[in-house]
Image 1 (cartoon, rainbow, N blue to C red):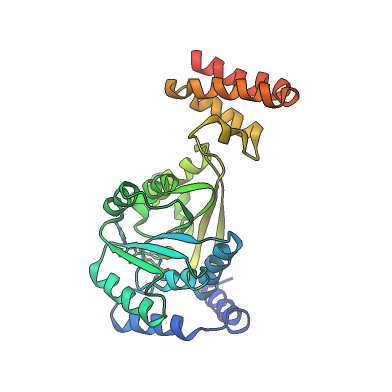
Image 2 (image 1 turned 30 degrees about the vertical axis):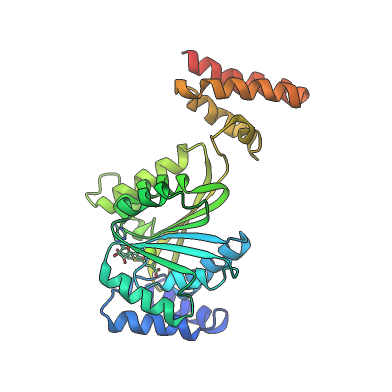
Length: 288
Ligand code: SAH
Ligand code: DHB
Ligand code: MG
């Protein structure tokens, strides 16, 4: 199996299942003409993002890494009338191209292109009380993938979906000794996905016109603002173990204790079964 074949199949998919759209085609043409690198998502990946936005009934989307606005236009195009997409781009020239493309697509009132390094614009978003965003698409400099994911958690709610592009990179991600900061940043993201109690996540490898790569898909499943939300999780048992880990943090101990109390009040039968198992474990960890 080779790159030629992967590209041929992507072309077939695009021809038959993902028909082209004038605004999206014009976006790629204008981006090429302006000298932007062709590192936008493929059409079938853009449509996957649009499908996710629709499946989540999303109204607000955050994108990190705009380039010429191609993926932003895919997602913004399916938002409801009052929907908003904020997209962060470090390069002012790219951002200008993106704004033109967005305006041509008739999405000027929907898409807000913010210029600056995302590690500077993300704290600004938090400071101005932006969000929570229903969907976040992380697709910028890969060295900061884990940092972007952490910011995304601050700007989302329980049930929000976070997608991270380019997390396999030809398989380079398994090279623990790689000197590539992108590989190291992405490995830190994997570790975060594995241990972060607030998310349920997976990573899928892909092939296609963009080569051999992959994406991470995560759902924020838990909000640590208060014990009531801890109760709402769908994976109570597993999260319980994670709560046990968190309770090592002395700040969280009162929350864990309150959770135990509430569970006992609300559902004594469930509490009977699980409180002893995982809140108990949490308390043991916390006092260890
Ligand atoms: N999402 C786009 C492709 C993004 S390519 C699409 O699929 O159409 C990655 C983009 O991230 C580039 O435009 C690059 O300039 C931008 N970028 C790189 N480092 C960044 C940073 N620190 N902050 C914000 N954007 C950054
Ligand atoms: C690069 C960035 C991307 O987002 C992508 O999809 C492919 C390549 C890059 O920076 O090289
Ligand atoms: Mg990408």
